Length: 529
Ligand code: SRM
Ligand code: SF4
Image (tube, rainbow, N blue to C red; front, side):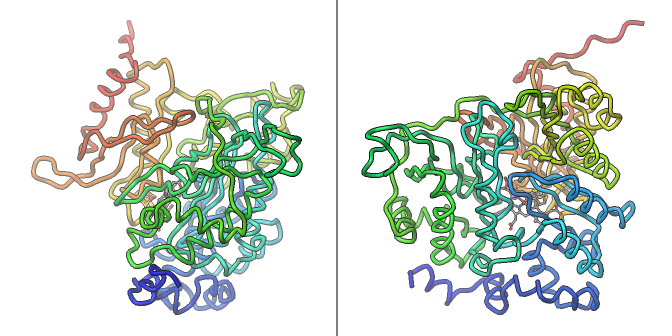
């Protein structure tokens, strides 16, 4: 047992204690019981915490109406699956809705505990799972949203992402091996040249890279040749206390070794990661404690073989694409179309409609992006013009305004009890007002996040807005800390805080100035009468 593991046993925080008493995944067998007991009568630790192991989140803001977080490997689902999700939220009328998340995923709202057995049965029937999507588990695994469609892609990430999910969740049934990590864990695989998954903000990320390998390392290689694989990044994370970009592990792996490397890293994190202080238990804290060399060699021990050093350079050399609009696929005669979903919010009728558009025009497939938008792939040239006349595209535009198109927002105060401010509605109203008075020559990426947990990733935005409480005229009011300088795609790096405690009621004029001075926005000419 390591020093860290010893500390764990002697100094358990409240989360470690309840996990030690009963594994979170145990609630999977108790869903029927909870459904008949009702949310008010059931054990509070099961309700508020352990249910997250099956993706069910108690919402103190809307007690009795739970949120369900799915798993959508690589952000892909079928029309049929979308319809099942739509039917779930539809039964809750105005209280039912869904959000596309910043991890290419879907969350459902309004869920009643008595309906869970039926909901899980319906998920099972169409191959959907919400298992291990919250608390100290591995989050939805992100992959390239245009994997298999993009003529310039280096690797089609879909199968690998699915294999990792299957390994970690036992094909969606739940896997006790990975249900008690010290903290949450994020994994991403980039397959294109534009780092569409924000590799740098994940605990473990794979970035395309060619490596010169000889026969001694790679039996299939003939003498010295360049082989495709991934450079590995580790330790990226955001938290209220600390935010770090991932750092190179100085490891290159071939695609065949990705799943076993994930397993090895997770075993090291699970068995040796710091557990005493929840604020210091993400993977980077273990790397800090050990140093990268020791971490790397522990991973090699678990893997049972030594790892090759990183390739000299990776292949991320494009600016990040947002995939909104119409694009040719690598398959001749087919197109993918990216629809802008304002702040990722969907209602049942939208979801049914998206499902039927994908069915009628595409191949029954729907994709999600980390910008909270939807892509419908595989639309033949012959059907494209008709597709573009569909009424849904008036709301979910393929050509939104240059601020609107890059807007991202976390859940905020409407449903999240950590929130210090309301985000989604405010974000939409603000962008509308700014677009009404300013013109732009290029998109400006504005990300809103309701509190320092940074679910809306303000550090990757051109302008990031993080909710806070501030003072104005002697009163406590909702405000934001402003982040700037986040760079995505090639040479990605995190933005930093440039201004603190700006009251939300003053934000419009502050943003107007920032956009004019830093992003080339211009005031619109006043309309002549
Ligand atoms: Fe998050 C906790 C929503 C992506 C960092 N996050 C929460 C909770 C579960 C808190 C709660 O119980 O209310 C939020 C649920 C609110 C709700 O009702 O929707 C929540 N996080 C979200 C989502 C839905 C934001 C969104 O609107 O898209 C995203 C769901 C992703 C998914 O599908 O799994 C979401 N959260 C993120 C990201 C972004 C990312 O992964 O790229 C981050 C920063 C990256 C990271 O984790 O390193 C993030 N969320 C956090 C944290 C801070 C973690 C930490 O180490 O301290 C918390 C708080 C915690 O875990 O204690 C948190
Ligand atoms: Fe909630 Fe804060 Fe995450 Fe927004 S950033 S979803 S307010 S925890």
